[in-house]
Image (cartoon, rainbow, N blue to C red):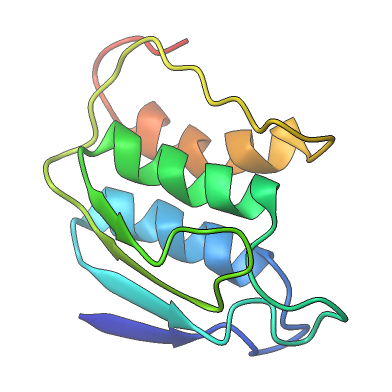
Amino acid sequence: MIIVDGSYGEGGGQILRTSASLAAITGEPVRVERVRAGRPAPGLKAQHLTAVQAAMRVCNGVLEGGTVGSTEVTMTPGSPVQPGVYEFPIGTAGSTLLVLQTVMLPLLRTEGESI
């Protein structure tokens, strides 16, 4: 398992989204600790939770610690990334493009089409 310090650099959500994408692509389990520790309100917000859920959904993975406010998540991919028709509702005014950023590269690496 790869362990990532989520407070590294600016300590924002990008390290979490990148970790989720790479976990889906490589099939390696990843734990991100101290999620968004550099922010005034640390932990997962709705858009971050949706992004990591989306990454695990496209690879049939398991997400542990996946709740709003959580400061540690573990992502365990279950299979190679599968193309398909996906919908990832955020439920808040969170950024849809940041969710798309998380799943775009894994889905582009598949041989099928995804929507």
